[in-house]
Amino acid sequence: MLKRTPLFDTHIASGARTVDFGGWDMPVNYGSQIEEHHAVRRVAGMFDVSHMRVVDIDGAGSRDFLRHLLANDVAKLVPGKALYSCMLNAQGGVIDDLIVYWIEGDAYRMVVNAGTAEKDIAWMGLVAQKFAVTLTPRPELAMIAVQGPQARAILAQVLPAQAALIAGLKIFSGAFAEVEGAEWFIARTGYTGEDGCEIVLPGAAAAGFWARLKAAGVAEAGLGARDTLRLEAGMNLYGQDMDETVGPLESGLAWTVDLKDGARRFIGRDALEALQSRGQLRQLVGLKLLDKGVLRAHQKVVCAQGEGETTSGTYSPTLAASIALARVPAGVAVGDTVQVDLRGKLVNALVVKIPFARNGQALV
Image (tube, rainbow, N blue to C red; front, side, top):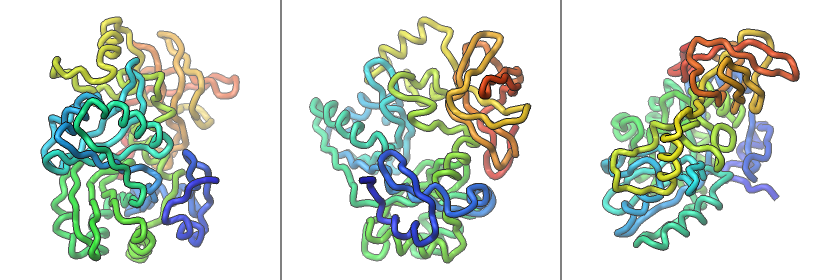
């Protein structure tokens, strides 16, 4: 049986169409996926992301543990700040991509993907055996993402006692707040390319908070809109744009790999350095279709330098065109025209700079 979030009944009452997503029964849309997409780009929309797993990390060895576990370096953080990173296997492949927050002292909070949560927690538990650290998964918590140019302003109206905290949050930071006698965590992060917050709260409070947001004018949005929004923003989806067989250096995520401290031998570092030394790394690029059709994942891309493959593809409501991420050979450059195999027919696509859209505007 599929797992359900505390908001499942709320979604059904709103007429949501649900699908199996990583073993969870999740809303894909509530009506028009394109309208949900535009609501986020133009005003504000909300997503139930309670299927993602929060893991709290504490103990004297927590910092050293995370510096060994993650390709990015938590030593960069100050209290309240967040870090995006990949968690790698010994071969340099991506076990998961995640966000970790330094709360204070030895306390950190991590948010991992739904479909990989059990695998992630098992892997972290194995690595943690060598460190003085405690891992506490928090399945009792819900998580709601409120995204869009007016998201924080509306959120402040719904949570007036926390308005100053919401207004003062810097991008990629988070803080705890007492709301209705319970501990909530409000972070200025998201997966859409728009401003907004992700709120971690007790599962029992989720339905009431969702209703208040909806009454304030925040549109309900499902997985369909979330996917078109994240792709327009050039954000990777685990399992498509990278996985355990492909590392961050060939997934457009080299910026998340911190190699500055030579003494920090994080898991997968040796494999990444060996890959770098061989050179000719494949690269993740953006494609905008010039001909008719819709780009999807796993379509062959023909370039002057050889063949590649689309990893994610969709119709972009903001650009009114089909777009994709593609892993292609070294040497392919922005401005090049390549061909994509759409059901046996080669169609033309332009290599473009990522992201495709941000802050409500098309960039390509």
